Image: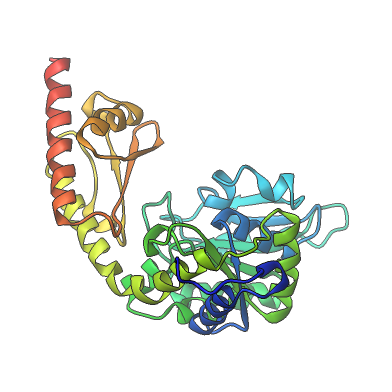
Length: 329
């Protein structure tokens, strides 16, 4: 990062950013890419680019764009989310089709479908390339665009044993994070056609995301893009190791078969603690987890968590749960 060649990216003059964008487009089999500060901004840019005020955006009800992006599609892009419930967070065309608005002038109109791969709140579940292509085929036939929130799309690709370009082949745009699983300190990418990226660059600047000598961040992003996918299988193995051990702890509920990638979501209702209490009890042990529902706790494995860290988490969970049961008695 300290040695990165930099220039003014607002004027397209940062060579390190330009190289990162070109490489991201190449990897995804798309025409162009754009470096953005965050995944939330990347998703908002795509939604804004594909819609008009008053349009509806179909998304899974637990999706990140619906729950965790401060209603930006409504507040800034002027759109309404139109949610559908998918098994394990994964939507089929049939489930999407049922919530598409009819072509009637006094109804708001469906403009965009947003898919999330992997699906965070469903526990890292994933779409196959074939599932996404089927949705794109039907959606495009009736004039809908399809955006992929691929914050962890490389995890999906590794779990499926395919390239990200196969997963994203038919979508109109993709956002993916250089942070999260890939481990860069900052940044995400938006990928699509030349025309889409030209429009996205305008919205990035409008939303305050135009940066100057940002090659210092893009340099880290380039390493994350090239090197980190090679080791994501380790994270998946660690997540499965964690899930298998948790399944053996009385009062913690999880089906290890549901863990497909690097996210482990545990039901703690039988422990006598709610999710916040369990997360707080783990912190003194150096274990950071997240409450995602009143009795659901999320663990995520990543490049900073090795087998030893997983073992520490298992040990801490056993100790905390045992103590809770003792206090309850």
